[in-house]
Amino acid sequence: AGGYGHPYPVYVTADAPHPPEGLRVVREKEKYRATWGEVLGAGAYRLYRKTARGCSLVYEGAERSCPVPRGTYCVAAVNGNGEGEKSLTRSTDGELAAWDNHPECGFVRDTRSFEHGYRGFDYIENRIKGVLSYPEKYPED
Image 1 (cartoon, rainbow, N blue to C red):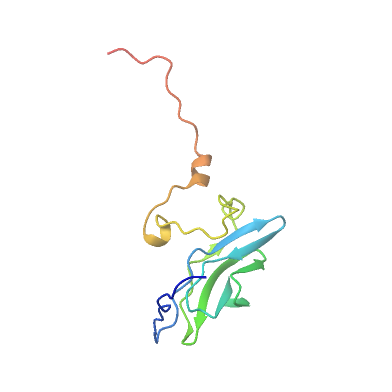
Image 2: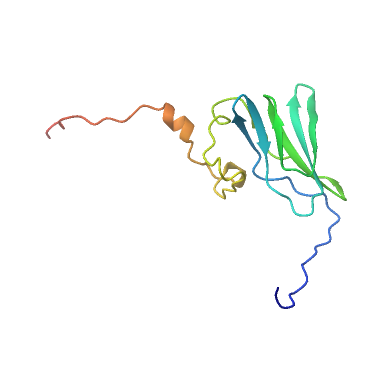
């Protein structure tokens, strides 16, 4: 219980929603799961699988999580003005889908990500590189 508060702000727009951020496709045992961030005002989300012919709809609903087979995916938000742009794609291929650095968090927004124009530190690629070694003795000048 509490005192009177200000009304929740409502922003009226004639635009379709922006793309959901944070699309992740991670391995769950033998399957994969796609998850993404919330878009305020969106009543539903549409998850698409990229194919040679374009995109095919694999999920539509209010949930922000969906089991998926192997493939490359993108997601779009839907409000009363229609469907917004699709997000960046994420794929089950490669090590990135098998390596989840924050499994307990679900959705993590990193402002230093590729989506915001920054080159992030690629832990998986770095693991492939060799270990630097230094000589036992340095040559004398």
